[in-house]
Length: 244
View 1 (tube, rainbow, N blue to C red):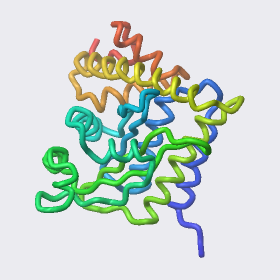
View 2 (cartoon, rainbow, N blue to C red):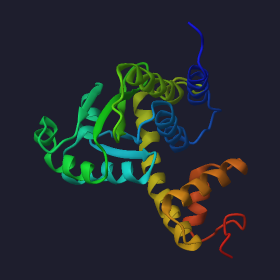
View 3 (cartoon, rainbow, N blue to C red):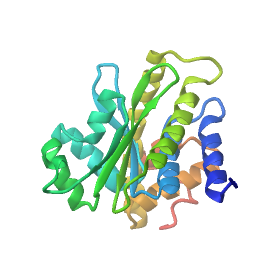
């Protein structure tokens, strides 16, 4: 069987996730995980939910605003596939979202909001290290339902990110990794603030603002969270401040 361009791209994305330099930005890693998953599987959105030290679920990042809002909705409603997947640590096979479907009994309020946002099926794979679970990578589709092979690829991508979190210069304990993820949760709030500041400044939407933030951070070899803190505090680099 010959190797396809998608096979090569998938291998490159796995390597990208598994081989970050020490001191990498965790939010960057997990956002890249969601964007790689979306591009390789051809789904609408992907997001990451995690379990904190108290066993509570929180969302950490998402590939786009649709997924971010639906992850926030689930936390507000106390129901939904992202919560279930993070809590169980097990894969969630694709579930069709329809008004007259078992999904409406599983997650009635979430199903209504997801359909309103154009999401017609959901699935998930565990986010884990080689030793313990951390949360879930959540897959949201509009039309196309992921296949078994798609879910296997999503799991490989998630495992590559999990390995990167576990193996840096030394093996990390579960408490150390959870502590890092909780710090990332705080950083996520700063990034949301920076997106809003930049979107308002440039009269653009928050997704475009986030793209600009990430591009500027990478071109300047700066951590995304550091740049976001500057922008949220009112210090916008001249290269970003195109509204000036």
